[in-house]
Image (cartoon, rainbow, N blue to C red; front, top):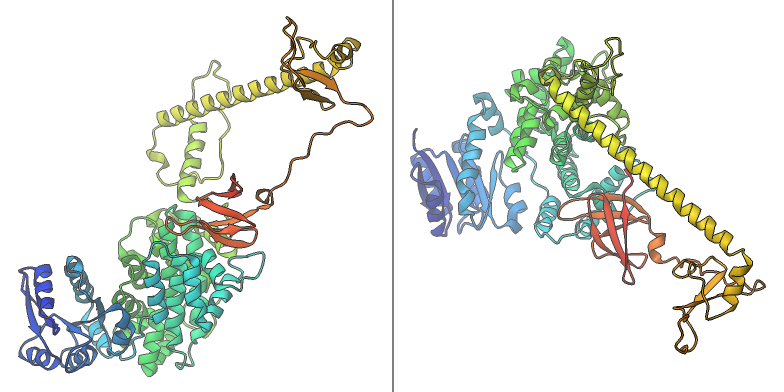
Amino acid sequence: MAEKRILIADADPKACNDFRQSLGQSWLVVGAATGDAAVGEARKELFDVVVANFELPDLNGAELLNRLLVANPKTLRFVASAEALREKATCQVVGSHRFLPIPYEVATLKSTIERALADDYGMSQSMRELVGRIHTFPTIPSLYIEVVNVLKDLSATTKDVGLIISQDMAMTTKLVQVINSSYYGLPRTITDSTEAVGILGFETVKSLIMTVKLLSQYDKVKPVYFSIDTIWRHSTSVAHTAKAIARIESSDPQCSGHAYTAGLMHDLGKVILAANFDEKYHEAHVVARTEQRPLWEVEKEILGASHAEIGAYLLGLWGMSDEVVRVAAFHHHPLRAGDLAFTALTAVHVANALEYEGDSSADGPPIAVIDASYLQQLGLEAQVDSWRRARRNPDETHYENSTQRAKAAAKTVAAKAPTKTVSPAAPEPAPVSESAPASAPGITKLAPAAFARGSSMWRLLAKCVGLGLGISAILAFLARLEILRLEKLTEKPEFHQIVEQPHAVHPKIIAVAAPAKLVATPPPTPLPPTNTAPAMALQIAPPASPIALPAPVKTALDRLKLQMIFFSSQHPSALINGQLASVNDLVADCRVLEIGPSSVTLEYQHQRRTLTAIR
């Protein structure tokens, strides 16, 4: 393998040593203390990678990288700076670039640079040429960087993030618009950014900030063949639908999070192409409409790359997760990704096609459609109708996921399996479930013996439950008989005579709870030694003024109502009595002690109560 070359433009001599230590013998590291020296080195020979410190003594790193772009557009370029200067550094670099934080993290330099090279080397020559001609790549929003920096502190709360967002009126308005949309179906209007952050969650909010701010950088771009508002509405719809589909098919919350983020960002490439190549991109729309061909195919033919590839390249530049980048790249042709199971890519591919259903026009290009062969390969073709229902009703939770369908089908096969019977004419047991299709994937691989063992286990469990219920009913019946016996006993005359003698207690009355009209009191004075001295005496309250037992006093805990839990391992929160609260917050004078996935524990005056979320 040929030796790779990297140019480090940094006044600190330690920078070259850091890169040599991290990259190893397979790399030739060349250092330059000034921008002019770096330009001179670049004229001598070509470099695979150039890293420029933004704060060089003679010219800033952005200007250096811009000069090198003209000389060699194929070189992979990194601008390096302190995190506080990130936005300033990246917005001044023309065309494609990547960012490295200073101080350099020696442990991760090698993986960061080689991953970037792998992404770049995977591009076609036409893609490289197109990227080299792009001069208005959007920059990472400063608000996004602020939120990410705050969330690096594990003690950060929704209030911290909400305060940052509240200082940006445009972002606050968009966030409130999203949270009050029909997708969430909240019972009241949310106007506070902190409360919106608590309901949406940190990852969703970060994705929204990134997308909203990126699209706002192209407010002045108004091509006649599509609008930024249309891209926004379509992207948010795809994000919500993809998240709903991911929740049905996967129990991994990270999958639904990736599906939402990728759904928001899957069409950013369209905006970049329209902003940089207005005439040619318009031509691509005309050809696609005239020849009734998919737009992404015509984009690649005319421009050299599709909006999916450009969008993926952009997301890769910003260091988005590999999953989000893959979804952007393959959301129109998921079979090329080589996935053999349900992923966020599946969710976004289907959601994108479902959002276009019914929106086609006679003079428009062909709409995106679901790749049937892809779903058939995953064994999910029967789920499309369920996904359509989830799109119409995203808050519904009764849709079965693939695991539930497999279990239901297993029960059906177990119920229909032949069993040993005394009489040959005995009918077969009825199926346990009819909700799973007979051709559910994987069912034919299960052994009948496994179903028999599972069926026996459930029968044993059912017997145990029935026995427990029976014992509970018997105990309740006996307790009722004892109460009736005591009520009859208090009506007998000898009972009243016994009570009127303060030092004599019927042996059957001792240690028995008194009826509502009886008051148990200890002896007022010590009694002389006697063989009949009781432990306590009972007296009947006068009928004219019966003493009623005090009613239970309601505390602040009794007035609490748990409405929703937003659980995360680091920053859980809950909606209680209409207030969004975190651990240690006060709600109606009650302190939140703990927030779990399905319950919240609160304390009031040393009394505790656990509220459980209703599923």
